[in-house]
Structures are given as structure tokens and as C-alpha cells.
Length: 141
Image (cartoon, rainbow, N blue to C red; front, side, top):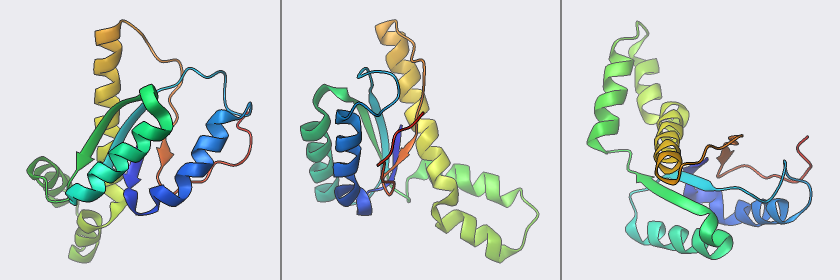
């Protein structure tokens, strides 16, 4: 899963490419990307879509774009936060920070992966979540 805000993706993607092209990553070269990113800027979305398809070609299985103002997300986050007995400041923080929406992004990636597995009669052995602000530079054992 590749998730997050795209503000740092352009600067971190070369590290992901180098890592995946090296002999240092996990088991083999059989991998797929299920992406869920946050943006409400259509030109940014088109740019990132093109960048990812150019870099990873057929490895991109799905890209889902989430707008923080999306009705489904707003309803879900409001229901979750409103039922927690915490101060209003913390409720506002949870609704406006990335600390909850990142799990919604992973959930979307998971649903898209499960649909892809079903449609293609396959099952992934390992799932690795990458954030757009992460740099992979060393071997993962």
C-alpha cells in the first residue's frame, strides 16, 4: 500500500525506485501498488498519476484519491470522533490532522487489493505499507 499526502512524493519517489530496482528488497520482483492519496487538486492528481505510471508501469493496480472534504470520510470521522469522550480540542485535532485519515487511506487500499485478488484469483503473501514521506535506503530483512 502506498498512502499519504502527495506533498513529498516527488522528492521521495527516487528512493523507492532505487530500492525496488536493487537486490535489497524483500523476496522478489513480484509486487503491486495499491495507492490511496489525499488531494483535492485535479492537476496535482493528474501529475502524480502520470509520475507513478511512468515509474512503476504495470505495477500500479489502483490509485484512489481522497479529498478531506469527501462526504463518506467526513461522516465516518465525525461518527468515530463524536463517540470518544475527550476534550473538544482533541476531537478537532483528530478530525483535521492526518492521524485518522491515514488509516482510511490504508482501508481503501486494502479493499482495492482484496477486489484485485478476487478478480485475478491470486493472493498476496506480504503487505508493506509505504508512506509518501518515507525514504527506503537500506535492506529490509
